[in-house]
Length: 107
Image (cartoon, rainbow, N blue to C red; front, side, top):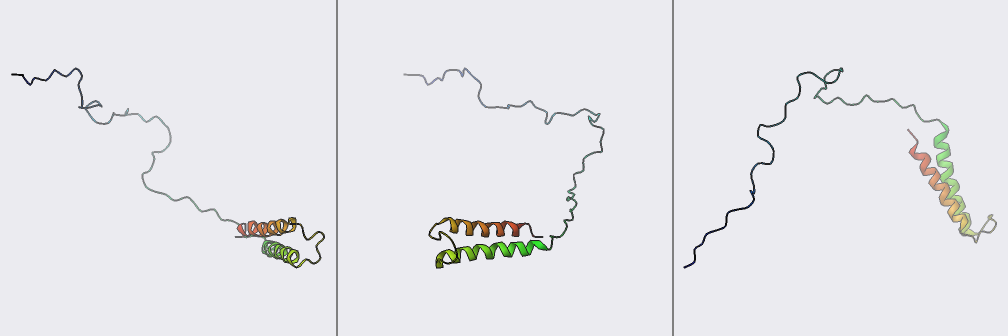
């Protein structure tokens, strides 16, 4: 008959990893000279931004219209030297992109 004895564990497993007693205690004296931090939420003070200059909407619309006009003239093959080149399309898209970037600056 075989006995069902287990060998003694060679290593402790499980149990507490951190020392007993909860969080560590802080010193009674504060380490900074400023006021105590508040636990209440305080929103940032709003900064007032000045309105956009009057010329910005004009430039924004003009850039978009110039871009559309360049693309249109490229497709109808009028008034553009070397209109068969695709650089005119890239230029028209660049004007439109500049108009969109100007629109992001409008307040």
